[in-house]
Length: 160
Image (cartoon, rainbow, N blue to C red; front, side, top):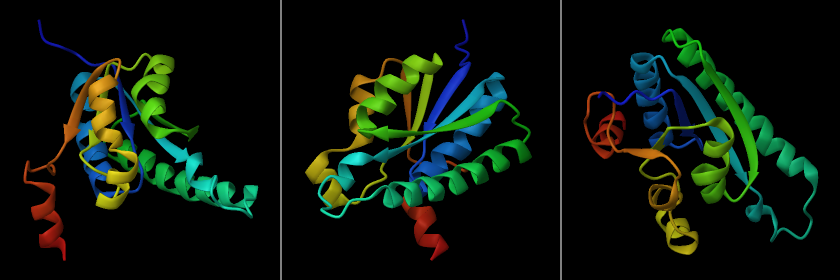
């Protein structure tokens, strides 16, 4: 029996890899007549060390995320995908992406970029992608290539 995904989750963080995952997820959603749910997680731990923390910082990050997500929604609809929405969550990205959002949205597939953080951040807090692939409550596809199945790093080098 052919696996058909109905509820696809794509975490987006503004990185090139997340954009690749989004583009591939749009194609998969169209082929499966699935709905596409985008999520951006504002890592509130990043604000804990700021002594003069105020809500305007979170509001600014949220506003930037909304603009990015609105563009993704627009792009998905331009590709013919109608069932697409997004959420902005606050907290620890790993558990929100691997467990909370999939549980709340009946997600059966997560499509996530191979990386999103720089190497130093991965060493300090660990890879969100690695955690999601290990602990997610549904299938996970790690996107490493562009729409032509060329390695992302090659694509980046060619864009420069």
